[in-house]
Image 1 (cartoon, rainbow, N blue to C red):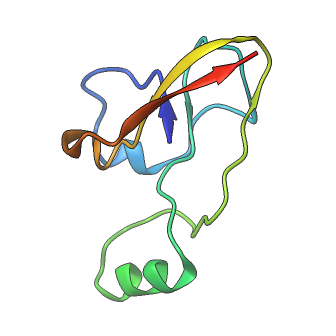
Image 2 (image 1 turned 30 degrees about the vertical axis):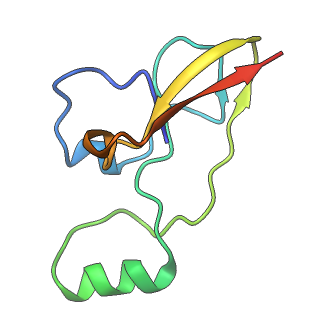
Length: 86
């Protein structure tokens, strides 16, 4: 789940978490690659470099608004949406 990723970002960089635990609509916030421990172990065995296994992501919105997000790995398949914060 990524908010405001810059265009042209290295695809490997999209696997890494960016930003903090709060988001006001400015800057970048990203969970990085989310996987189960089993998926992570499989990728490690196959030599695919991944950051630590993360199965949860929490982000607190500090301002009201509509925030578009995208799955950086599946954006080409249309995996994007919008969160409405009041």
